[in-house]
Length: 113
Image 1 (cartoon, helix red, strand yellow):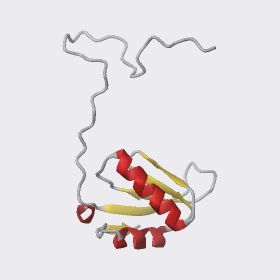
Image 2: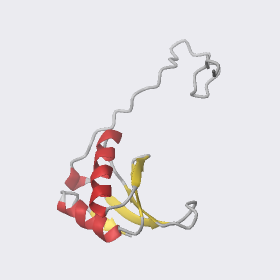
Image 3: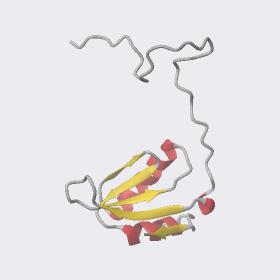
């Protein structure tokens, strides 16, 4: 049975500020409408064991909304992937399909690089 961790995982050990709070502050990310988002679809091979992935960058939305878009994109492309750090990662070279789907769904300022 693992021992309970009694410390906070933020990396802060001690603070002299009387107003300091260990609770993580929530990000107040306001979502832009889809037609105002500047998205880039790039192909990447680095640190992936030679496998290629298509990455959609530039989202200004909440992580939950990005995860929903990632699920729809993965289904459309018929491939696996994930949503991390305000990016959608789709396995394989699906840049043309991704741009086509994003433009069809209102993300008109999407570029393929």
